[in-house]
Image: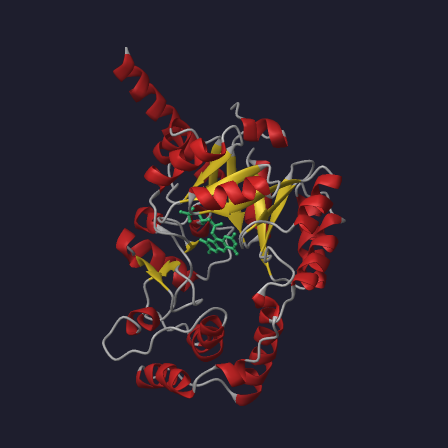
Length: 370
Ligand SMILES: Cc1cc2nc3c(=O)[nH]c(=O)nc-3n(C[C@H](O)[C@H](O)[C@H](O)COP(=O)(O)O)c2cc1C
């Protein structure tokens, strides 16, 4: 295929795959697209390990990384996070009661202490530590850095561009996209509300063309709701130069998702990808689960701001739930395309099906225009 994004990275298909799983990253790049490893707040040691593995398996194909970096060094998120003083007792009690009543055993004390240490380490990541993480990544042949938390800071853009690495950022509104363009981004990802993970309120059908127009001639990737070839075709028709996908890869054999959650995804409908602040404190689309539903019932406490709610969920909820694989509580970020997921498949098969259906869509459109 020909598109500005294919030219930018020397790739055959303008299909970008966000994944926390290195196997997916490698497979998508090998299939002609572009794998992007979600690093969130990995330690430099872990970054080294993951990228060494990718370098050893990806051949000469390009790949990228996705980081969570605040746009300013004096970002309020920089303040050290002390969960014990921030977690209100009634919120902890609410979650404990919910899990106790469902018969989910508490964590053994030593496990709880270790988990708590790890979570606090992740949450107390400063922008300087994020840059150290990026510096480690820059020693690898990455071709792209995408920032998930607002516009990338100037330090990041400078370091990347000095090495001919492209920079992108996620946007849920045209004004976010304009900010990214002004920050020096080489392209923008327009994320419709259908998307898995953190997402805004505007649907892809409305958002994509408005961002394409706002930042033209800067290229735009359409994200949120791309699970099949007709949706890929729609993104291109609406002016995008390619697609940015996340949920689609969760159903593959290569993905990191545990079998119990995969099975839940196969049984889910589109409306089971619920938008909730219960998991991270920000609006996040995730697989329906009893924990998130409990926050919608009368009498539930309001959710806490990020990252405190995220800490509450991990410390009091997720680890307890996943330890015993309690199906009703299991969740994972996923978009509305979950309703289309029926069975496990491979990355290659997914790419093949995307292309096959996109070509059918073109034929259909061509037929209507004759
Ligand atoms: C499991 C999962 C985790 C995600 N984590 C992140 C993340 O850490 N950083 C980020 O920029 N986006 C993250 N996203 C959002 C994706 O980058 C992307 O915007 C979204 O998946 C696109 O919509 P789709 O899910 O309909 O394909 C995540 C998405 C999923 C499904």
